[in-house]
Image (cartoon, rainbow, N blue to C red; front, side):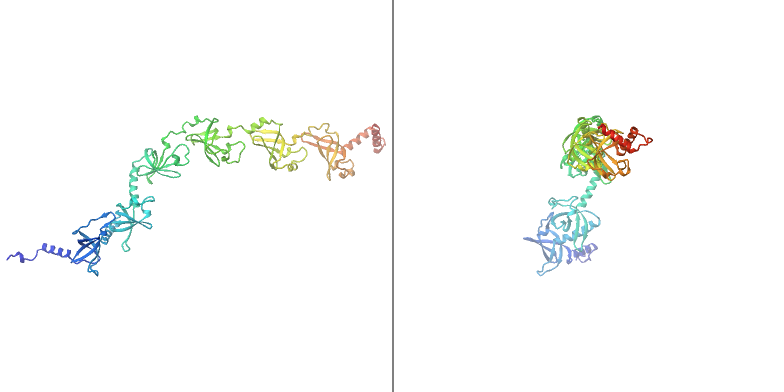
Length: 567
């Protein structure tokens, strides 16, 4: 009899027996257990989970996004045991739930360690997409798909790729992931590396990726730089598409790098010769050139003299006569114009141009055509408190001052006889080209009554016709002249009792003496009283004196008799 057959098991034997007993322990509901495929029937697999307990699992549970597991009899698999025995005496098991349980454990650890996980986008749902994380289903919001909005996600579906878990809730079975976070992190690393290898002033090639109103974004091989519209060309660029197009390969110069924000400014014009070099020599002051209008603003128009060189015609330099007109009514975009160089500032890169300087000054032209004393005709453009403005040849205006409307009547009264649109004649009195003023006179069309006064002078006796009788005197017109005068009440007679204006009637003729005649001041003063006093003195001197005893009546009577005899 062998002793070994009756010996007690050793420690190693006991350990082996214990492990064997655990491996054949009774399966526990709600846990993941190992089983063996004992048969494959149509679309299900029959799996033995031990203790003569079998269950069925649909073959489709072994197939999923990114995996295609071929199953054979004898294969060992892990399944989730929901119930040991159902009404048919079979175990209720699931491969999907087993995989999900395994995934949750791994995903929770990855979430805690802030590690990326691999998943596959397999379906589109409201607001985003579903992602298979090796059995666990996660939600990928639309905003987390890419750095920029993606219209078509089809190329990304069914492809294993890294995701970052943003949120997990095992109780609710919710997982939210992001692809964008991974891309941003990768991009940031790549940008840092790329920016470190770039230098300001370096010339590189890139591909135009996107175009906006203010410029274009150029891909420099993983990092974008901004090519601003003002750095595309020395000339004015209305829109970036005038210079570049999407997908175009361009050579650019790195102008500035911000290492904190990783922003890169690019330029194309910096690779070309600066057209402003030696600008003063090419465009001397007062020289004239032809250019093309490129832009019109409220304050003027820009004219391109050559590619990259523009000058400004200020609104004040556009027209001699159109002062308050928008530049767009004088020139139009793309129009070719001749301009004169007024000022060149190479430092500020500014050229001031003049358009009106290429045209004859209309005031010079008017002065040449209508010298002082010429008679002109024009339409009343405006009436003001100080005179009339008359439109003249050459689109210029002349002004008739109130004092030049009439020789005798006040201008405030005469101007009321004119209205806007009336065509009038006037005499050119003065032309000031520098101040752009033309003085006209209407009364000068008629002779100056003071210049043609004839025998009218101080001390002369004149015959007048009464024009108007007023309480303060009478208005008269000197016969055979255009001169009028006002004889005050006190000058109407020597005797105070006769100083009554009402004893005169319009149309009546009276004699008066000129007591004041100022040709320069255009002033004449008449007096009937002075004439009577003078006649009295003359009569006394000729026919007697106050000492002879004769009365004034006798003397005047004799004088009148003698005068009548002479007649």
